[in-house]
Image (cartoon, rainbow, N blue to C red):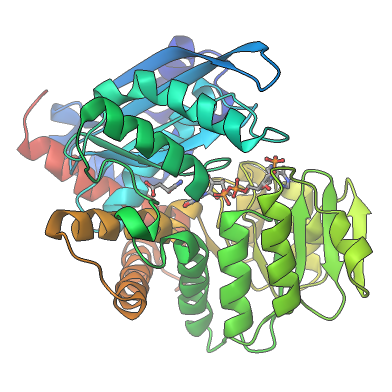
Length: 445
Ligand code: NDP
Ligand code: 2IT
């Protein structure tokens, strides 16, 4: 494999798709040695086949605002790789959504899903629709119009979407309702469903819980735990909420949350009341975090700054891609951070990752540490197929076991001669081997 040539070719075919190229480059660098030591991969053109999506559906979504205004958005579904199971991955509704972002997410999803050990291929989709400030009826009309196009290419054995930024339980409900009406079938075609109609316990919490379980495993390799650790979290969505709740349960102190308007610093750490308020704020469809500081004493709001400047032991970036840069990494390292575990997808820039790894701190890439969300989606699919529901304890225990196994896979494939674990390399190699071997088994298709 020639990484530079592959990257040049890819850039020529997909000019300017910065996030997609960033995600592919990271994987190529990690797997280069393993790939070149196994000539059967090159003989079957595995890498050229893996870095291009199987197919992309792009469509127009037309819907009407409450005041009668007509709106046009773009919708997408990327079916990236189906070697180990039906395409699986979330839908993102955010104004920044474009093909580059969805391709990076779909590409990373392939390896993440392989790491879970469950039979799921990689996919992603979404729209540039902005749910912020929209009424529930507008969100419903948009979701219905989106599904009018999407339904033709999804199904429980072909492609199973779920949530991501801007798509939570409410949106999944509207999407599912329209799918069911069109398909005339009650089936496990989406995950993240409500409990009453096929959802799984623990799915809403799963990404954040899984992230903290993964960080717990990393800390244990250094004889450390979350007890009394100060933790910075970014974002205040689904993943931040699950991460914050689990950190508190394990005795850690959550010092920050952030939103697009800035971040809040909990001078005494978050408590249960703060968690309740976080849920209230999220339910307003109006993502700003500053009201926290008006509502509580000892909570300070800082506009346009990053949560990474607060002195902490552990950092959990849980908002969005490239939200933590090289300077932020340096600040965290100078302040003595020992562990960074990504709840979001690709939140650390390549410069930040390099800084963390040079400083030999524990660093987990999202495709390993946030895999608990899609893993629990896989468990939801299993429950749907079996037509049963597992208890929270059963699901949580399975999730915990999956995160422990992913951690072990990273250690197995990522430990260097000095004993330092490069979790990025470990995750990329472990995920790649499973997918590449499956592609080899299935011939050139
Ligand atoms: P949510 O929509 O629940 O929350 C995302 C939150 O982060 C929103 O409040 C959003 O605000 C905010 N946000 C976006 N950009 C920034 C930014 N630059 N700085 C601070 N806050 C920001 O999404 P999720 O919690 O589901 O997703 C968060 C991340 O986790 C994403 O990277 C997603 O891909 C990843 N992830 C999600 C999984 C899931 O199961 N939901 C599974 C695995 C990973 P705004 O919209 O106003 O920008
Ligand atoms: O990035 C992700 O793993 C998700 N948004 C969850 C995908 C899923 O299918 O549950």
